Amino acid sequence: MVKQDLNYKVSLKVCLIAKKKALRLIVIDYRAQFGLVRYYGNEILRQNPRSTVQVSIMKNENDQSIFTGIYIYLGALKYGFLEGC
Image (cartoon, rainbow, N blue to C red; front, top):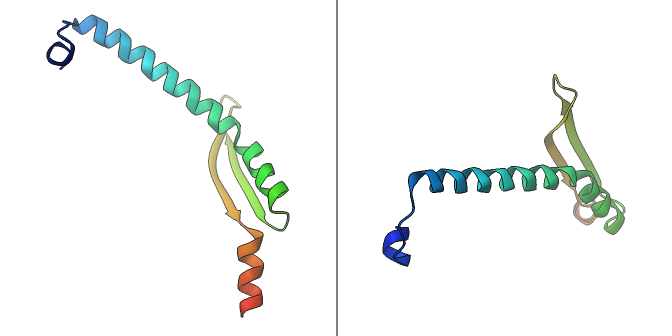
């Protein structure tokens, strides 16, 4: 595909190295984003004070925090529903 589009021949070894680097960058970005989940939850509460945010995290055998889920219930929805009933 690279040879057809760019008229350049790439060896299998170069492709594997590039793939390894790309996957490493994805994992680093993935960990950084999940590290910000609590910040995102606090920002939601700051912008929507009557909201509910629960972040679920578990510890693995290496005592590392593992994100397992997030629950968000925006205050406008919560109280809009209650006032409408």
